[in-house]
Length: 64
Image (cartoon, rainbow, N blue to C red; front, side, top):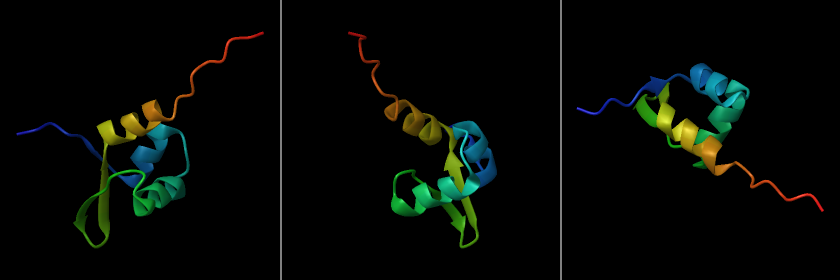
């Protein structure tokens, strides 16, 4: 059994420090994988939210 923590839209938004609507938009657009438990019950894996945050990090530019 895996130990993926499933988050609600609000919990995922808190983790990513964005609005819940942003999480929903990312999920619908395929930018953030969703776990669809039923038509009205969508969850997000915490590691997917973290991976999205990590992939969005920009490399620091050296000052000149």
